[in-house]
Length: 112
Image (tube, rainbow, N blue to C red; front, side, top):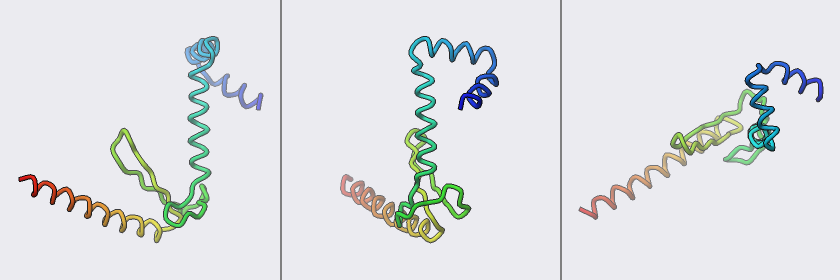
């Protein structure tokens, strides 16, 4: 680890090294946050399960599918082990949205 870490530090330019040094002198909050975010990202990528059938998904599989949806500030993602699970999810999502839109339309009509 020391050799890899030393190589990483040596690849930083002087401005980045100064920023890291200042952060470490002040408790290392920014460095800790960056490391924690990277660890969470890796854990999510490596420990994913199909949201339809709950089977474990190999992060290096070519038949893995992930949908990202929602507004930009609150993106959600759903991972699938195969195409049929993704199709099942989308079909149910379409039915959900149709029901929600009908409820909204009925509510609007009753208000008028």
